[in-house]
Length: 446
Image 1 (spheres, helix red, strand yellow):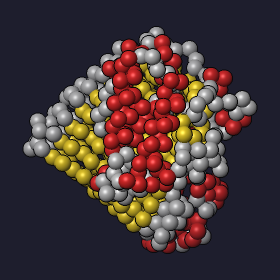
Image 2 (tube, rainbow, N blue to C red):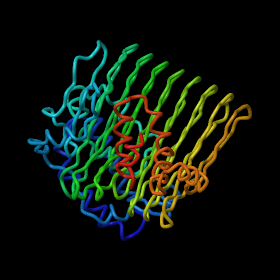
Image 3 (tube, one colour):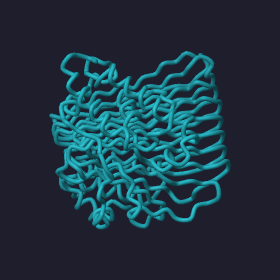
């Protein structure tokens, strides 16, 4: 443990695990038992991270540590949720939908249509019970896992399981919706996406919470792309204002594969996202796009890592942040070009817009290069709205407040426009406008 004060939190979680472990999927499968046990031991030895840890220097999780969040003991009662769920769906989006309420699959709220041959869209809980041997090669991997990832592995109960055989393609996106409703709940979703050679899929991972509920979501998504496969992944974090969200997305890429990540962080009192991808073969490409829009006293942290382990890899990373009130943002983007990864082409940019004097951003784009024939660039900017642009709009009859909102909208929209699914772009644009003081005026001008 980090210090003596952390022991009550550790003991509480260990006691919680002892109560819930027999109820978890796969509880009688030997490799699952071993994997959970090792993960729990890792957490017990390390405890919660503190700001003395370099990777958590700007993000304190003391608020999570002090609260008595407990894992759910039974499936949530999701009856009567139809109207609430409908408000979080994307208009005009034909998709396969998996809904989880407080971490438990809600079949009555989910809709999975006819699937092409070789495509599986189901739940991890069912797979752990029915075909656990198919999951072992993936769930036992712990590359880049944080201590919260270990906690997730110990408590994991459900989430999305997507598997595409060689050459399979799913035209419609998969919308995985997690709804948190129960105060003081600790929810540990695990999503697994496996795309075999040449397969293609788009997954929308979406987190929402009931306003007024204080809860803790600790989510992990693992993505495996085989030779020539393409996975497009969009995560929309729209947790309740009192919620806490710690999330991780870990991708492993094989030859000529393509992985695209869009991370949109709008909600939660405290949110952290760790996004990593590893090029395990030649010719991999990735794009990590992100937008964080926060106000009040919200805190949002993105830690990304791209490991160019093999030659001829291409990566693009483009993150933007909009901060208002007394909010704080953290961006740490690490690109590592390993020895032998020649002909790497990597670009990384982080732009931040501070709308108030009380808002703050800590940004650290980072390159580590151990090969000599590469093309790599990185940069970051922190600024306010351009007075010249405001003056230009005002000279054309746009009032100042509307001009500021319009420029902020354009700044953030640049990232939203990178998402290929039109209904998702439209919903994000609506969310963005709802957060701007003069959003209604922008709709009128548009």
